[in-house]
Figure 1 (tube, helix red, strand yellow):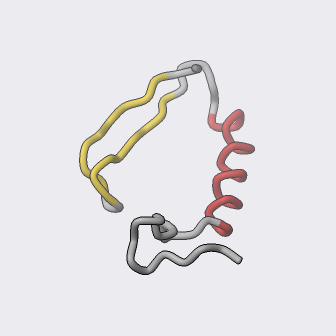
Figure 2: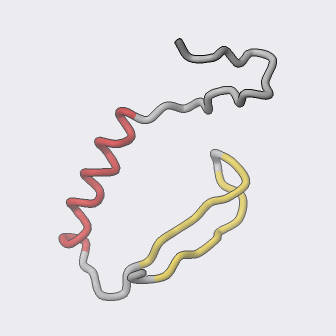
Length: 61
């Protein structure tokens, strides 16, 4: 694993705010990663599917 990961405590979206710090990378090196995360965010869902033990769970067809 390159760099360090820091647990910053409670964040705006939940209990865990996590930060990653790279020691040998420049901002230019990380632009492709930022572009990937930006694209991923446009496709990510904001909900978790119900578990099989949930009363609202339905078997997939």
